[in-house]
Image 1 (cartoon, helix red, strand yellow):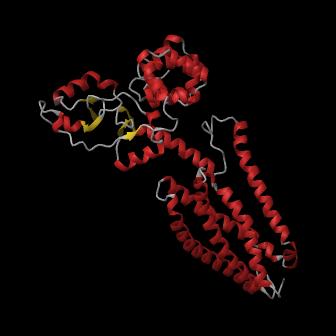
Image 2 (cartoon, rainbow, N blue to C red; image 1 turned 120 degrees about the vertical axis):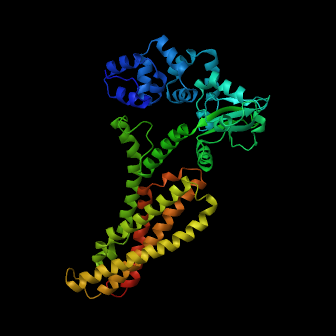
Image 3 (cartoon, rainbow, N blue to C red; image 1 turned 180 degrees about the vertical axis):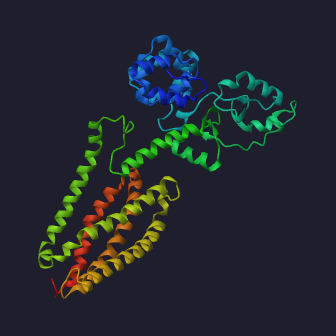
Length: 437
């Protein structure tokens, strides 16, 4: 076993994860310090395996020494029988903390908070606060801020540790207070809390009840873990896959198939509609076979433009750059963008047919100019339609309470494929009427 002395808990956890089960469990037991910190860096599956391998005394020591927010994460993901076992091993004080945290809604910021922080009273002197920090600071999640509360434990201010260090030791901290502080309500959704952290550029923020009672703090690293989970799920959905509960490498292949099969079936049914649309125009294709040559070009252009627009809008929604009320602004912007993009592709398509015809690479017949016009005009309208559809679908999903990320690239592309064919053959019928049709 390699020397773990002086290594960061994340590095120790990474090394232990590479060992076989027996060696890993023994190595973890032999850790003389940072055991709870190392444990927090394991993935959920590995945490469960280690917990089941520990004896009662080792497990009791581990679970009581964990940070409350990390422990809450265990209770969210573990089987009920294991949660019951862990709760029964907690000391009375730690059990109260754990059960209090579990009582908050699953996606609320309170689930991530820790009660380990430093608080003080307005009438304390700087010297008294610093002595208090020396006594209790080791258990605190962060010492960047000191939280000032009144007799009823209501938050009245927060002070940077630097202000205390630079102040006279006999000065009451009430003289340092400006009562301008940022706090998050306990029932605030995690994603809303993330934007508060981002807006005010804070590494930690206090959590208060509706009555402004200070109940804990949340640090930015805990928020980042949740945002990483959310973004991973959104990316998977946008690729046409249901969100995975575990990492890709830990998800069994049977589960991967299940997660992907549902969307593939839905998209397959959608593509059947594409085939049905083509069969509807069977007579036109029979009279002008060359129209079929441009079907892949036409539908891929519409699908790609729709996927682009959907990607931009979904990300803008996630960053709160656009809201539901901005739908008309987005449509106007995408109409202009889609028209210009369609014109660019339409011109490219026309030049391509012109070049092939004039150089003899392919003979489109005596009505080649009409064919080029039909393809060019179709590209303009299909790209325009794909862009607008890709932009508006996320708004519709958000309006009905669904995740906009469900407007995955395959879904938008399939939808635009079907409608794009109708646009293409309808425009071709206009351009080639009396000629090939």
